[in-house]
Image (cartoon, rainbow, N blue to C red; front, side, top):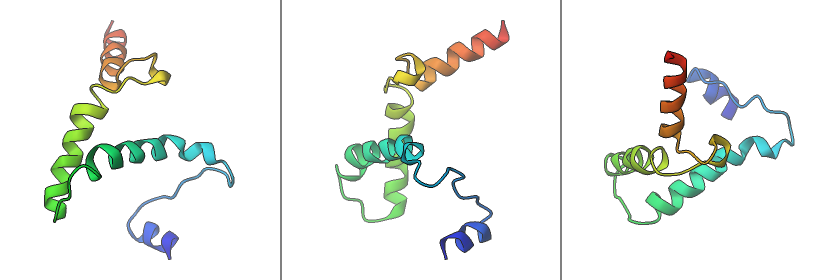
Length: 89
């Protein structure tokens, strides 16, 4: 059923190998932060109310303030700005 739904929506499922739980760690971390910082803070009655809260959190907090070890303790925006500058030079 799940695979059929993916295919009918034009999506491809994860291609990770069976038992490779580390593949899911970044996504699990993201959704745990989303749950803690957006979903659990205030109840919203409709998807139309929830969507801007999620987008705002991603744009203002997750991308702009959250420093990531894998990016040398930079935020994704800082890292992207540096990479773009290096490519232009």
